[in-house]
Length: 388
Image: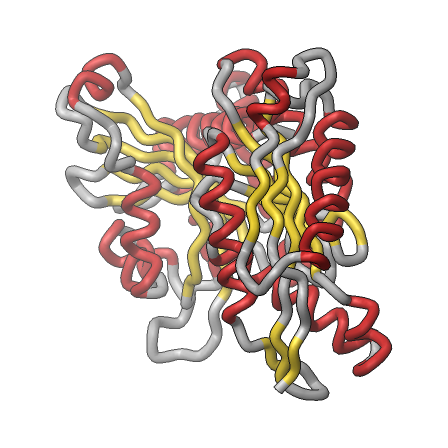
């Protein structure tokens, strides 16, 4: 289910719950600042079919929410009053519903470091005055840590809140209504499994399937926008020597460390993944040949200058990189992968014969002269391994 679908579903639940709550309140069973669903309802007139329907709706919605550890709320910002569904106290784990009767009281039970996160999610900082004039609502989703017994207690739970804010003409929040659900062990286990399905276990980066999917998305976007991107294929030099000398576990540690180093040098919006045993694919968005050269040199230098601590000893490693421009030199996933791998093979071969200086080979001029057969761009590093 996509995020808009989730938000739409959440709004439906919140609307149904709030409607049921208002219906109960209209029956005269409301008291104080909270919906009367948290108290015993007054006797209903059996001849009032509308009241019976509203009562049944309230029971059905609250039963569903309770089963999935969710509760609904409406927050009036001007008065700071929060009206909760009747199941809020057991779902949130608070001693009394009055403990979360206002927005201020609710924030007092949140982790201090997450309060601003929630405020920012509900009121995006990039919402301009013109946006506020044209939009009267904003949707949000946020997760935060919650302490039902107060900040002096050790017991905490994680909550996910998603809903809708009504805005005034200045873009300020008038009311917010939504759904809060508990996300503990089961949620984090689901997230862990989802992460595992998308990421390589050793490096923590995208796995081969997700890497090729991301590459396909970049190819499609580049064809539509005609903005150049680049795909690099990097590999750890002499990995077989590392495995023979120190064992495969140390080799895995080196691969993971190299991936971390490259990741730390990526720009925001760029991505990478493990293509095979010692090969890492790198996607650079909005990147021309000059920028690709600079990026490749940055990765090569960062790895060469790093000291990698392993279970056996400290090592230093080098990498070789081959690359291709998108869409000029590749218009399909097989082309991009194939050309990048060919460039990498030549980078490794030339690196073995290179001097101590770093070498970068630019094949684009040759490609322009030989337009029928795309040739990849290849940066060629020195390929050596040292131990200390």
